[in-house]
Image 1 (cartoon, rainbow, N blue to C red):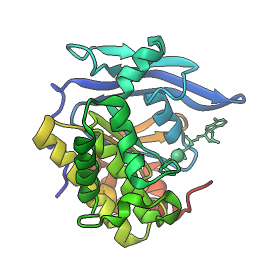
Image 2: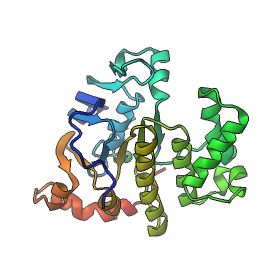
Image 3: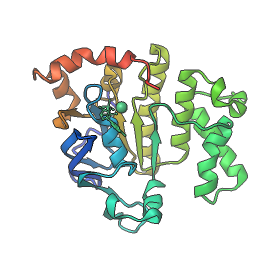
Image 4: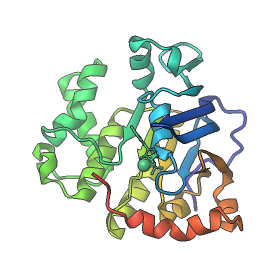
Length: 279
Ligand SMILES: Nc1ncnc2c1ncn2[C@@H]1O[C@H](COP(=O)(O)OP(=O)(O)O)[C@@H](O)[C@H]1O
Ligand SMILES: [Mg+2]
């Protein structure tokens, strides 16, 4: 059983629209005309070979990179009616406002020095009116949700004291604590052992489901090579190839595809998913 919304999402609000996105580095084209629309409540997996431009696409969707050509529109959750706004047209204050409603679980987790508690609490302190007690409860709830129930020692650990699997769970807890409208995951299980990977699969699914029940639905965008994760989530699949969207459709169609581009990639996925995370 997947955990994505089964209903047709065509009538849902647009969260992100990528139009004719082009990006080159040093004369080498990485993205050349990406078109993509993501609607509220969807689970979208972005797949494609190593170096296909998945992270570069993500960086454009969260405003860390600016397009050479084309644009990225996002729903502005900080304004009434949640209008679609062009990321490239926002000033710093506007960018801050739209970013407040997203969370990113980076490939390398991007935990900062300081304790686990500080890692999760900082954003809440800076972006909400919650009291110290409320922040503590939110941090505790988020850590419980990622499998640290009853474990108080986790709060004071620093990132150097966490295993790869624990750091990933803390990074997910930090994202969940923000109650984001959109959560982006960049290769959340790459390099993890099967047990920790399975925990993350459940976590991504449970987080999506919980938000659907509690606040009308979260959009999840996941860059991954993890076949087991796809099998668990049965998401919409968007495959990048030669700088464009080569495949965009249901997981079932992706799995069955006999395309000469999809097949070899599908066979390669387990190896890509084992690759150690590059520093
Ligand atoms: N800031 C950058 N400067 C130069 N090249 C970059 C930069 N970011 C990404 N690239 C290149 O763009 C290509 C796509 O990278 P990336 O999106 O990270 O691939 P992946 O699909 O594995 O996530 C790679 O060849 C990478 O070396
Ligand atoms: Mg990447």
